[in-house]
Image 1 (cartoon, helix red, strand yellow):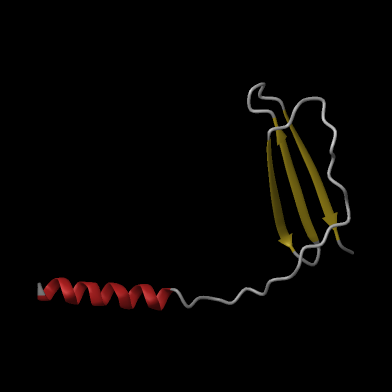
Image 2: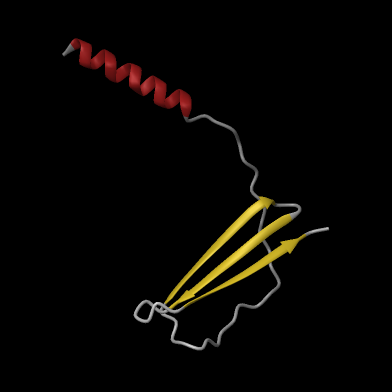
Length: 83
């Protein structure tokens, strides 16, 4: 029982030491485009991905519009390059 308590204490120490990592500054992501609202099929699944390679220079937005029954899908990709 004593060795279990010691192992648990060491494990807690290692986990708490690894959690104090780097601080990431968050910036708002603003976009000024409109998403499509008409499709050639009924949309019943929508997903959005935002890929930020460099927040000050390049951002990419990927919108997935899908019909699960017919497997039809449109991927709408927008890239925003800040100069």
